[in-house]
Image 1 (cartoon, helix red, strand yellow):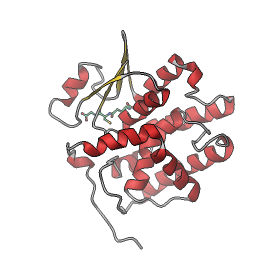
Image 2 (cartoon, protein in one colour):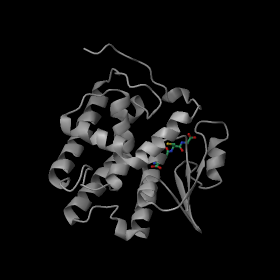
Image 3 (cartoon, helix red, strand yellow):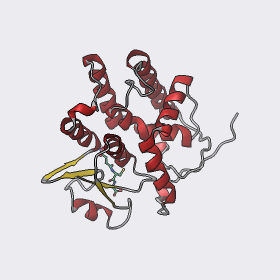
Image 4 (cartoon, rainbow, N blue to C red):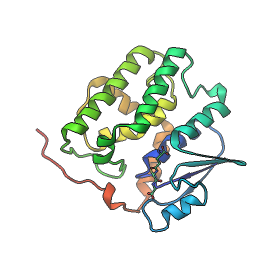
Length: 221
Ligand SMILES: N[C@@H](CCC(=O)N[C@@H](CS)C(=O)NCC(=O)O)C(=O)O
């Protein structure tokens, strides 16, 4: 299998299926196509007509869209429980993963994933605050209702954690206020070995994507 990804520092959508691949412990190749270069869409379109990363190639099968890739992996490796086992937990995990895929646009726009940015507080507007409130409610509810078997949303690592992983980094990078349950969850993502491996590689990158470099710092308090 091969996964085509963007820069590890900025490509939040690439992070998601890459984490699942590492978690599965399967062998895979990766090809990194830097984001926001003049030839980026053209290079991405060599692999997928959608022209965006991530893209998974498994023999003759090409899958794009992060959640579709994760679904493909769940189907290919059914014993890995990439979705939680219980029907209620699985339904909930699917619903919140779809929310992540299609929503939280204010938070994603104002606080791009940028793993190299030293953590500093950012002034956030009401739309971002509303996204933060909804996201942390999802995390608290999942942890309370389904998270008894481990530190992830549904206990063990699942696709829902892959989907929220990039968001968790934003909470640290922009020093966003959160409740203790959400803070513990953000820490869990940062301590997850596959995430640490991605993060270490991100820190070595030197490409700059200017529109993802947000530096509107405010004085805390
Ligand atoms: N909904 C897509 C979003 C994919 C996406 O927007 N990827 C970005 C990188 S994170 C991209 O390829 N951008 C193309 C570019 O920068 O030219 C998914 O979930 O995979």
